[in-house]
Amino acid sequence: MKLEVKCNVEDCKYWDEGDQCIADSIYVIGHHGGREAEKVEETACKTFEKRK
Ligand code: SF4
Image (cartoon, rainbow, N blue to C red; front, side, top):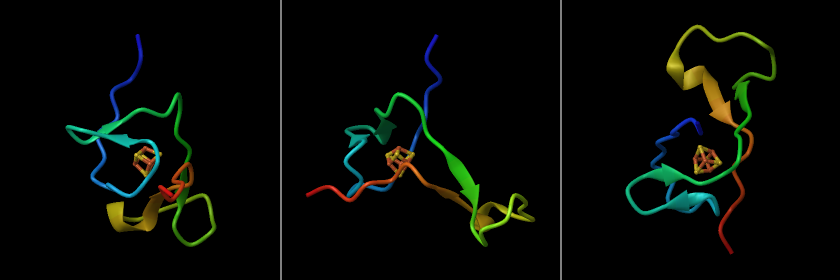
């Protein structure tokens, strides 16, 4: 079963109607380049690609 990923970044090429992420997988990284985060704002989706 595929994990449902909801996302509101509309200008990502993997974004689809209903705030659906249609990427096969996503990679989330720590915002500061490390492997840790204290709060949600310190995480980021590295799979993001700007829609052309
Ligand atoms: S790849 Fe990341 S930024 Fe792009 S739609 Fe999926 S979760 Fe959002």
